[in-house]
Image 1 (spheres, protein in one colour):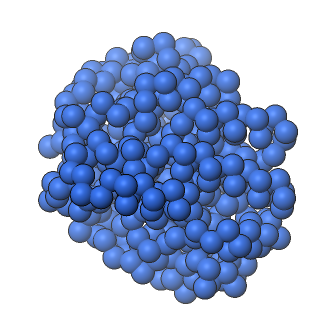
Image 2 (tube, helix red, strand yellow; image 1 turned 180 degrees about the vertical axis):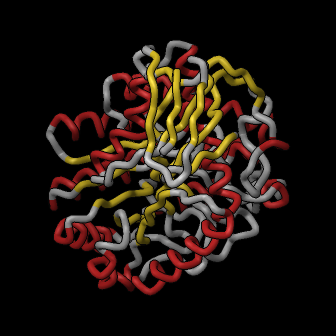
Length: 405
Ligand SMILES: [Zn+2]
């Protein structure tokens, strides 16, 4: 049993916390730490198999502990991509091996990739995965589902199997057209023009129409524009089971970041405007946003230092999500209860997860600069490096094991 005395609860009262464990640990944190339920990050790319030079589950699990994240859902755009039962099982085996080596019992789920040639695998994987992920616009990896008929078929099957569909909603046709239009441009800021908001809006409309047709449960990942928010808000009013995820980078960065970050501000969908950031914040306030996912998508310094056009899209985020949200709490932009809903309870409910006794103890008064040298992620950088944030995890407890940050 782990017994922690004098720990602050979210409502400000001080009490004690008892967590089942094979170890016997007594701690007194003297009212200095606040207990949050361990965060669920339903959107990470931990790069196994195929891209372990960017990240693996040994480094990612340490990064998760440092960030107070006790459950992750890993995306299928691996090499080979995770699109069959056989690959799901092989991937699980590899992950379990890596987690065992590092001794961190990180809770995890896998997304199955939607691939036109492997739709017959979806039903077979039903009990092995958390849901099925469709890439409507091309991103990292070879998963692309841009044929409207195939997308329709996916939604039909997923409804039949009662599986959640997660979508990367960007319209491939618009992306292709914009790529041609901006061919040869080298300023990374062009990324936000190439991946035009119209692509995200059109794809989101398409997804909502399909959801309505087949009565699916759909998660629209990394919502980045005001218009998508409006569409989702309206769909929710009509009681469609459309859920929205936003990322910390779309909340806390905007198009101006290219100036100092270059391609380290490049991700899909891209950074948007200040007005979009405002719309995302409002959507958090009114409950249109269901979860915050890091979309932790690490690439090495060397890869990111390539010129625009060659540099891959994606930024890491496991270690900074919670500190960024704590800073937003100090800035009166979000309440602690909202943080818990967005990083834990909403995901628990929507994905119907078994309950657990994972916790993260946060020092809400601790101020620290995001320092690349201290990050546990293998890629070793953060788009938020250099920012002073107030409120950091101090210990993370997963499956009865304590990890000190
Ligand atoms: Zn992603």
